[in-house]
Length: 332
Ligand code: KG4
Ligand code: ZN
Image (cartoon, rainbow, N blue to C red):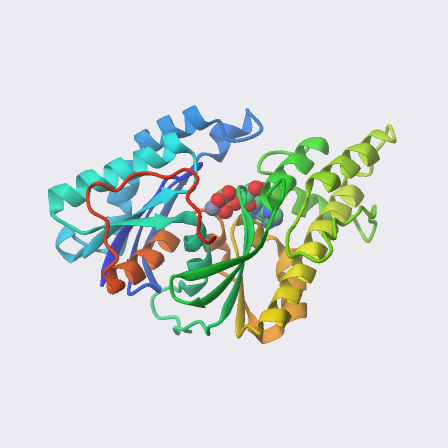
């Protein structure tokens, strides 16, 4: 089974061909980072226009790299939400046009769910490792921070979420405070790793008795610490920020894993690319941890294709009436 997948929910234009929910035959990502850097964040109108320009060449390249003709494609999967409405509309409308003209089933995919399924993906020839349920998922991206319990394919219960900023958003805002470039995550990670053992310890929002997160107080603490001196130690502050976010994410994930007795834990989304988070999660969870390969952590279409394959196998097919939902939820 081969699915052509399309992702345009934010600032990456992606297309991929995925076989059987796990094997990535191609994964093409046209990043708009340079376009948005001058604004210090994603400019929604500019993102939509850029998706319109990039989407068809990206799809053509994905099919070519996979060595796949239209006759080999079994369905088209596309992100329908959550995300920026203008950006989502580009992908969904292109997917509808292609599904109609090629008489193919159309599959609307939830972007958050796709971040979790990124940990199923492997290159052709790599051994397949089926996930073990019940599974705990921590999705940490630019727009979301959620702890989800996944008893089986396609079923979710939300255990916790951020009450203010998403973890990735906090990295982006912290980078701006420290005068670093957008996107903030990689910039903070690079600055922190040059701290040479120095660290400005910053507070952790414990949110006792819940599995929820809060990062806005940390941002304010970082701003104050930066303003206290004329010569802020940027690497030490970046390290303190990274430690605070990582510490809370690891502790809450570990607590949820123990309470719910899960078999495996998936950490996914753009922030899962963070080296410190990956190593601390690995120390805490050992063999129970599943983290997607780096290229599948940040937004891409291969993860959309993975979900699409499972939806197609279940017969969960959307017709041409499929619509975007910028606020699409995964679990109650
Ligand atoms: O999943 P993603 O590509 O897009 C959304 O769905 O939001 O996540 C983007 C976020 C950005 O906030 C970016 O700063 C963060 O992921 N990020 C990182 C790292 N790489 C990307 N955060 C921390 N460390 C990184 N190495
Ligand atoms: Zn994402």
